[in-house]
Image (cartoon, rainbow, N blue to C red):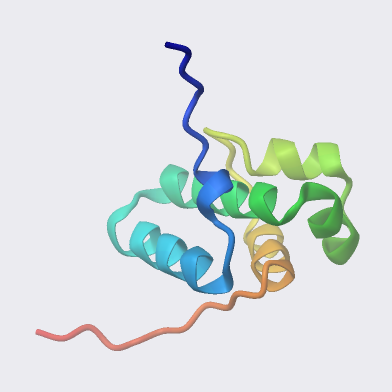
Length: 94
């Protein structure tokens, strides 16, 4: 039996799935996990498309969104906008 490597990007095939995935990571993940998740979403949508919409090169995107990367906040915001997302703040409940 042959197996293949699991790639979450293969399952991010709708805006609803992308939003649920990113919201879960934002709620439970650390900085590195959030950057990696945004990279998975960009890969699922297509790095070429994201590069065109952000004005960044594909290699720069791969580097900025790779595991262990520390991208600038402006990069994260550009990519979030390109993938159709935005940051929304809700007050913490006690």
